[in-house]
Image (tube, rainbow, N blue to C red; front, side, top):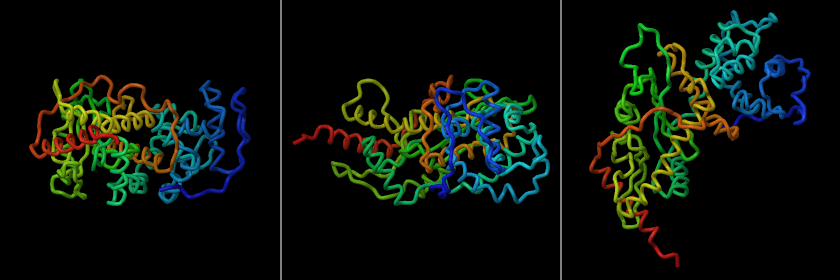
Length: 394
């Protein structure tokens, strides 16, 4: 969904050879917070892009146009409740724009509430209250940005994936990552202690060709294996009863059936609707061809999770004693913001995605389960790929 068009406003841009200018605030509550925010960050010695629009994206991950769209989603909720206590140090009520900016900066930077509050001129408790109000509203108002595609949209996704990765009838890629946290001693049970001795919560996501999340599962302890997490998810149950990945069957080059499926790495079981790579040495030509195409597709999930945690650093940093009942909502809203960036056509800075893996320090898991129907489908796809590789070009 594209944000509604706004009237253009004149913008003053800084020269690249000079520090950001002391921009004169406009006499409206929805813009003066931005200029004050810029000045405080400049005074703290933070590097600020000379172009104002780029500076905005650097701090909030979205363009001003997309920011306005996000404000339009939550405005009704943020103004309908009595804004008790939401007053800055100048004695003025916080505008919706400033509330959204505070919440998005907290999510984007992962900095402490004290640090975020300092550059906005508000206290720690205000940052906490504003951020949670924003999360509650987004969880309800932005849900339409994360949903399983309708048949027509799914056909487009499958076409794009086949063009990019050569896999026919592929609907996306699945992956998972750990959200690491510290817990009070009374909550530090083995249930939340994962394989690397961190306390963590899982996020599982299915993504499309544009790395947009189509389905997510979170709230489960990081001590689970990824294959067990999958089987506890609603997505698994829907696929098993034929309510997901149940679209039209395609025929291979050798007239074998290829049903809809997603791809996952070796941490997942091979199922009739989930393709994993062949393992071992001495693979045949068709197996090697399948693995190459599979690798290209499954990397979409890893890259999406890297972009998610790079954009919304609150998910990448160790979270200090989060409320485990609220953390799933924070994770969901970060995924919604990730999708909104894609849906609105925003381009992220090249250095936003993490330079290393989204789960550094975690060993690769391996699931040995292979379903016979899954084996048959994988063989059909492998033969199909090899057929077109071996076909003469004349």
